[in-house]
Length: 454
Length: 90
Image (tube, chains in turn orange, yellow):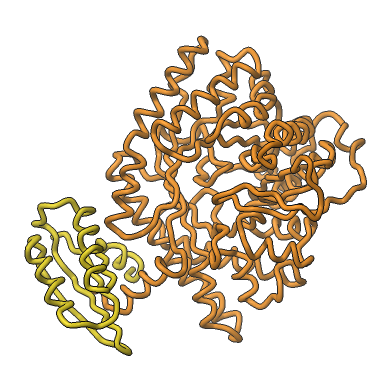
C-alpha cells in the first residue's frame, strides 16, 4: 500500500515544484469536412470541432479535481488546413475565413489554442499550400486562438528553399500585421523540419494525415521537479546524476500516462501518445535553464552547455519511455527563451547568444524557440536562420523548428512582452551580414545521402 | 472499491482527526487506513479511504474538505489513489 512518504513526495512536486500536465491535446481529423463550397466547408469544420471536443474542457477539469494534478491547457490539433481548404479556397482571403471559423469553434468549446493552420511543403508547394502560407499574417492578426506551422524540410525530402524564402517574408509580414502587440502573431507561427504528426504542444501542433479520426495526445512537463531532484546529487558523478534524471522523468511521465488514460476513457477517444517533454514556463522554478545550471553551469550558454543539454535530453527520454505505453511528439527538453526565466537571465547577462542557441538545438527536442530579434531584421536573414535550423534537423534526422519574433519598432536593448505562458524576451542581436544571394536561389536542397536507407 | 487518499497537513491543534473523520462518516466515506505523525508541531496525516458509497459529487466533496481545512487551520486534499500508485509502483 502507498505510504506517507510517497504521498507527500507527489504532493510536494505538485504544490512546490510546478509538476503539472502541460496539455491534453485532442487531435481531430477534418478530412471528412472537405467540400468545394467554402461556406459548407466552414460549417462542416465548426460542427465537427464543436461536437467532438464539446466535453474536452470539462473532462480535463474533472480529472484535475479528482487526482489533484493541474492540467494547464486543454487544446485541439487539426488536420493541416492547406489540405482541408484545397478544394474550396481560391485565394488567401478564402483561407482566412477558415481561420475565423476555427477561432470561433475554439472559443465555443473553451480551448485556448487550436493548432493546425498549417501546410506541409517539405518537397513542393501546391497552389493551395501557397495560398494558405500567404494567408498566415492576416489569419494570425485577425484571430486569437489559431496556431500556425509550415513544414519546409525533412530528412527524406531535403529542404524546400522556395518555401524557406517565402516563410522568411511571411514571418516578417506577420510581425508587421501584429506590431501593436509586440509582433505577437509570430509567437504562434512555427517553421518546421521533420514535423511529427502527433505533437500535442503549441504552437506547432497539428494532426497528421496518418492519424485516426480523433485522438488524445498528452504533453507532460516538470522542469521544476527535475531541478529539485538534482539538488540531492550535487557534486556527485554522472552516473548518479543520470539516474536521478531518469527516475524523475519516469515519475513525471507516469502522471501523464494516467491522465491520458483517464481522458481517453471518459471522452471515448483513443489514446495516442505521451510527449515526455521538459516544457518550461515563465514561473520561477519552472525552468530548463535552471536544471542546466544545477548540473554545473554558471549560466546557460557557458562552454559545456551543449553537452549538459544533450545528456539531459537523453536521460529524460530514457526515463520517460518506460513510463508510457506510447511515446511520441517532440519528447525532450524545450529551450524557448521567452518562456524560461533562466534563459532570459542568461541572455541579459550576455551569456546566451543566438549562435549558442543554434548549437543547443542540435541536441534538444526542437529548435530556435520564442526568440525576439530586432524588427529591422530582413526577410532574407530570417530565411537564412530558418535554413540553418532546417539543415540541422535534416542532417540529424530530428525535428527542428524556428519560432522567431522580429519585434517591429524594437531593437537590441529593448524587451518584448507577450504575456501569459508566452512570457517576455529581451531582443537578441542577429548577425548583420547578408545571405540574400543564397536565399534567392530557386528550388530545393536535396535530401542528404544517409536518407537513402531503402 | 474506489480508493482515495486524504492528506491533512498543518499546525497541530485539538480535534483535527475528530473533525475530519466526522465529515467523512457523514458522507459515507469508509476509512481503510490512517497514518499520522507530528514533526516540529506540524500535523501530518494520510488516510486511505473508500469513496464507493458517496452521494455527493467528488469535486463538491473536495471543496467541502478544503473549506473544513480552512476552518481548522490545516490543508486537506482528497485525491484518487491512482496518482500515487502509478507514480511510485511499477
